[in-house]
Image 1 (cartoon, each protein chain N blue to C red):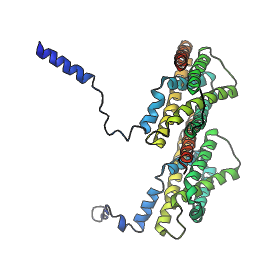
Image 2: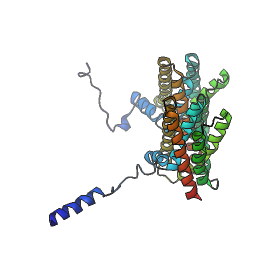
Image 3: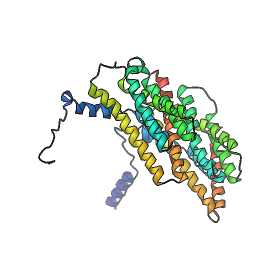
Image 4: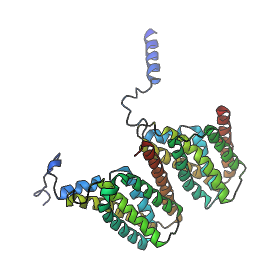
Length: 194
Length: 192
């Protein structure tokens, strides 16, 4: 009985042990850190995927123009963050991006291309600014930048992939459901931000 | 023959690198910098998606610009990195937007790209201060990389002419623009 208890305690400790994370200077603040910055932030994931889904909803040419436009404008936002330009309520802007884009998908709203570009552009600045603020502190800012740019692009592609479900029977409901989920995530973050 | 006439290894023989070895070393060194890689990738997408005829002219413009950058390096050396980043942004933006610019503007961009690469690689060295082999490597390295990437992209577009493939390259170009823009901001923040 005592041997079993000891074994159970040992297994529990081993199963819940965290990594020592020694000598991780090469990864911390580098490409992996930049790559996972959008991925591990649900506010970023929700908005990036929503951009892809909404682009798929709008069809050509928005389906590829939005993922082309977003990194370009995001870089401008990142530059503002790097330069230390004070912009208040960025977290609110990021939360709103999920809400607005999620609702656009939920209600299947189709806007002219320039309106879509404007909406996406404004939110891209918010997301870029958030990434840019953390960039100068990272160990390898260049690798960090490449990481979050690639990650953002891949999240867009995920969204476009989800958007392709529109061509499947019942896919319309699935996609709009994802839009509702994204808007909910955004609302949760907005409450948290406020 | 390969077994009977193997070349010497020259491991850690940096002091004895001459002629061919020096050229090879400077070729590799001249494409190694992140700013050069970003510029070359953006230039290659711009050139590779422009069609066969124009891509050839762009590569020629790049080569001419690269040579023109040699004498300019002594005075413009400190601006090399920034020039590469800005020109990289322009090439990437042009490729991402899918615009059809006038030929003169297109070729000017190719010329400036080549010049920026040479200026950055030579890093302020006057024209006669380095060996011919080093200069040859500084010219050949980026030139071959640009030509290879451009040719590879052109080949892919010929083999798969679907619009989706071109769109993928335009998305990649937008990523390249973002990277160039962020690097530029970091450079200015660092005061370089």
